[in-house]
Length: 294
Image 1: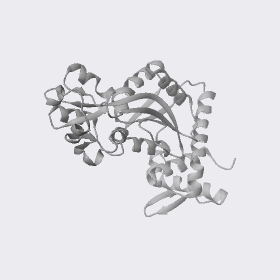
Image 2 (image 1 turned 120 degrees about the vertical axis):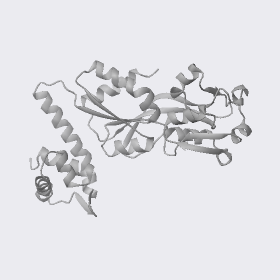
Image 3 (image 1 turned 45 degrees about the vertical axis):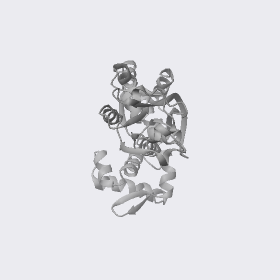
Image 4 (image 1 turned 180 degrees about the vertical axis):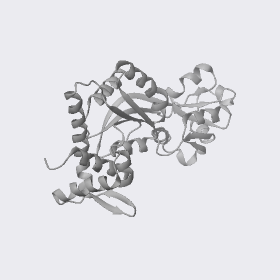
């Protein structure tokens, strides 16, 4: 074999960080050793894996094509090494989840997972749908758990569970006694909603199709809890996943509003890179996701 696993590590770290110095530091190598390893890999095969853009090293077209294969080779080599050593450790699992899933579902799932597999190492990143999808596509995350639909040529999307958004208000609001809201009422209200790029906003915009230009979007916030607090303070009405509102409805700090003319249903999805090797940890996590569906 004309390349080493160390060379693959340097290649992948540089692809992720776009800087040979930071890649070397992450691998506990000197910059000269990391740079020499990368140059040797390129010279052995007469190829160019990176293009220099300013101070950054960006993957060349060939580098982008080879990255998934390098990721899989390294993952399989680590799994093989663990098997040879008789180790049961699963290795690190990097999960990405959108706000609703990360704050209200994923944490309890991680606790369950660690209870089953005490030697597991699970890290959770919480962001909006676009950010999570980019992380999975860039091999920074092993898988993503997202709200709403997302199309990407390099990602596999699997339906996970059904969900719906709910329009809600403060209990002191006159709307709490209004019963149902028609389109005229919806257009007259100040709305506090999630930011563009989030799965929740995607579903809200779809549900309000034809009415969006008439809506008063008073505030756009990135965090679910901030929206709930703003609505509790009487600053407007909100629209979030029912999953995130169960406790507030039970306590009576927020009240649901009926909007029968609008469809707020949606799906939650699991996404993985099509070319990513599914190690034991990822396989077990996907099994847990299947069990967690209501």
